Amino acid sequence: MLILSKNKLKMFFITFFLSLFSFTSMAKDTVNILGIYPFSGPYADSGELQAKGALVALEEVGYKINGKKIKYITRDSETKASVAARRVQEAIDSEDIDFVVGPWSSGVALAITEVAKKNKVMYYFSGGTEDISGKKCHKYAFMWAANAWTAMDANLKIFKKAHPNAKKIYLFVVDYAFGWTLQKYVENLAGKYGLEVVGVDRHPLGHREYSTFITKAMSKKPDAIYMINFGLDAISAVRQMHNFGFTPKKPVVMSWSSGMEELIQLDPAMRSNLIVGTNYYSSIDTPENKAFVKAYKKKTNGIPPGYAPGAGYGLMKMILLGMEKSGSTDPKEVIKTLEGMKGKAFFGDFEINPNNHQTVRPFFVLKTKPESEMKNKYDFADIVAVSSTEQPKNMNMCKNIGSF
Image (cartoon, rainbow, N blue to C red; front, side):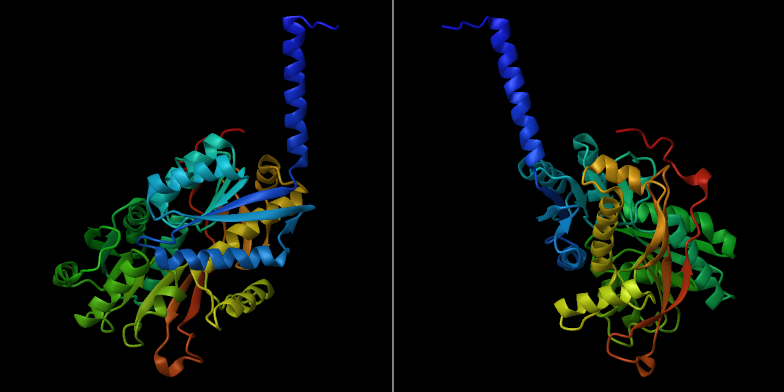
């Protein structure tokens, strides 16, 4: 009878379990992607739309990439940082997640990016905070939306061009990371365009009553109210400004808008005299975007996509592009391939800055149309400007992207 020593027995089991682990890893025939979206909470209207956009990208490749099946799961962020972080961690533990996209809220994203870093999974986000590609930057996180500085510069430039005699603007700002970032750059850039910020009111996410803010703003006699909020917050504010008679007499700048999803909820009179900044609009004139719009409209009875589905599609497309170009589904290989990549996407030309993982890309400024000029019931606005001007390097707070 063969008797093994304790050391030999120990080595036997170590070798056995390492071999078993290696076999299990080799046997993994899927790449697992998590979409973390706000299916409930203040941004619930956007969650399903983001998920639908991502589905179009996955359907284009038949849920397969580099010989592997794509397993796509979703979780509800509830627009709560602690809930979203916990659910991402649970999905990583139970579903062996390789890549994460979403959610919508910048505050939630700042919690998720730490989970991604800890677990070494790749994370692609679209939102307003600069911190993902700024002071919270790390090797595993990427930003899809235009930089906040780029967006605010484009809005102010077009507003001043349309209203050369304007001198004063008043800000409505949602009170969390997204709002703080954009407010900082509006105040930084206003003087460049001969504008003065004559007042600021911050409001909580999910705010619906703006009468006090509007009365206070109108007392300052601004040439425009400049809004740094989103979704139902923005819709509620525009409706009430119209009821107070501020619009259409004076313009409102919706500086970071979902475009279609917000404009479709406003009556034609309330849409009058709006300048709308957005990361995506369905009339972008590229072959890839036309194909996306056509595929998306099949899912929505003809309703074109706005920023939410555009972001869902765009985030998924960038991850799939990284896999395709690297020939790998390993997050590290995909990240290395995406760093510094230049190309054309459905929204236009892009470049990924390898130093901070910011996607340098177009930001679109729209001017709403009167009802008499609309070509169809969804023809709410024209793209009047496109800007890809990158944030000045000395302003970016990502000093070291780090390593794997």
